[in-house]
Image (cartoon, rainbow, N blue to C red; front, side, top):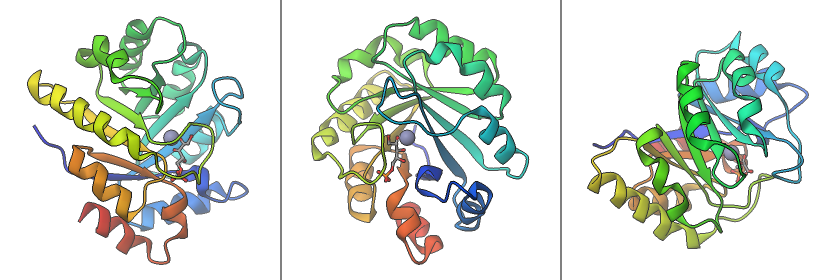
Length: 217
Ligand code: DX5
Ligand code: ZN
């Protein structure tokens, strides 16, 4: 089954002294999702914001909150991010922890659950979890910061995951994150992606409504 293409602007590229203003820029663009990047300084060499910022944004928004955890110990934080108002919580496949149990716990907290894989991580690593996820997040840059160029090498990986989804008759979404602009969005869409995250290109676009339209059209 196919999903309607969704653009999820990342507030990482917004103005962090006025996140509320960045949120309203996203709302006014016509996007239905917002992507919230959470970094711990261990899994990735950077820090961002935490559950309190998300809880404050939740009070002023009806967007779908797509929370992307880039943490070594995501299992310790899912309750905090669910309580803050996340709609989806995505956890990474790379660290060592009980991934199945954490995906299950996210659903028990009434959120949808996602699993991410880094550009150098083989798609085989997510195979054991395909029945247990609402979303697979294919990283198209090394996680940790915005503004990096898209890795073309992940395109076949998107295609493979799309094939698996069809063969297994599953319904999870395929999201791609990093270096998404009008050109790379098209390439991801062709491979079967149905959620595209965009930070730098979205906030740089003069006409954000037109940017969303051009991608989701
Ligand atoms: C990178 C983050 C991305 C980032 C994408 O670690 O996961 O969500 O915001 O930003 P751009 O669009 O600038 O690559
Ligand atoms: Zn992200």
